[in-house]
Length: 94
Image 1: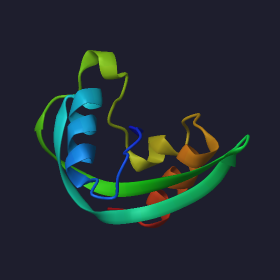
Image 2 (image 1 turned 135 degrees about the horizontal axis):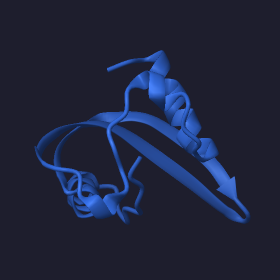
Image 3 (image 1 turned 45 degrees about the horizontal axis):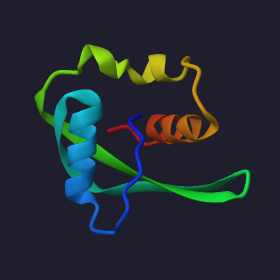
């Protein structure tokens, strides 16, 4: 899952821009899908997760990302928040 900091609440254009920079994909963004709040040491972090569709482009080799099935998603090692997102996606498929 691509992750990046978005400094303000009017985030959608920035999300599209950062996703293109990280992945090579231009996306169409839907409304927020999931919000996760957690702490890392003294920092409080909110992750806003969006469902998106690929409009154009290809995953760049440098992105180290790849498309996987929901079945394969269950078997991948990932962070605790990545696992929460993956679990939600398998409960609520696209």
